[in-house]
Length: 100
Image 1 (tube, rainbow, N blue to C red):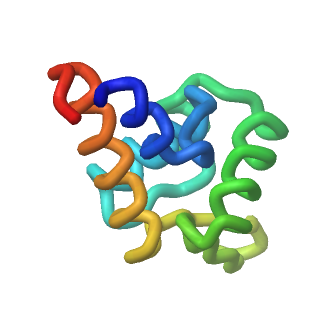
Image 2 (tube, rainbow, N blue to C red):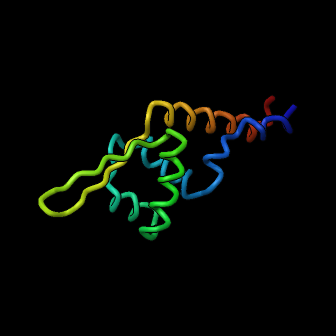
């Protein structure tokens, strides 16, 4: 039954920012903080808090280093994150098609 499909959606991707972060990371192997912020038109704090939630869930890997004297933070979708996001997309597709 279609009504049960709603329970297969992943709550980690409920917010549009987290959905956007994962979509960008699925399309790119590695994305810098500034590129992700610009792509999604977000403030520093907004992006940082949503990425932290995805990192805590194990869906995003954060890498911090210095380039010269400037901090450089990059993000990648973890294997678990890619799988979870694909399952979320599959559930959305089934919901849209009215499948059970």
